[in-house]
Image (cartoon, rainbow, N blue to C red; front, side):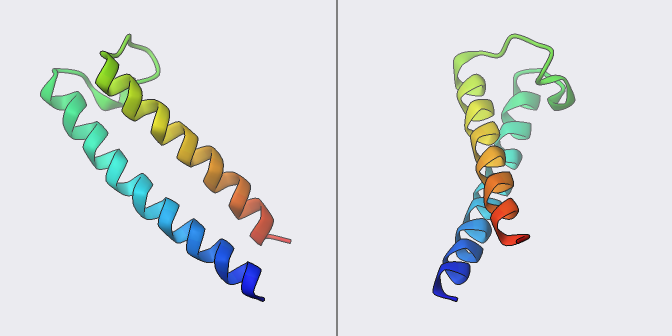
Length: 71
């Protein structure tokens, strides 16, 4: 049961971090004249590329953790 609580906490933490990153990424994209919906199709400056990569990593981690809680 403790492991399940730990996974839930991790999922909540990652979800919160992802929301913060999404908002920051959208804000930074718009500030540089990009449409956030086109992030997959444009060459991003290094700062935006780093934010994008971190978002993708968190999304992958969340998918893995959520898969563990579905058992």
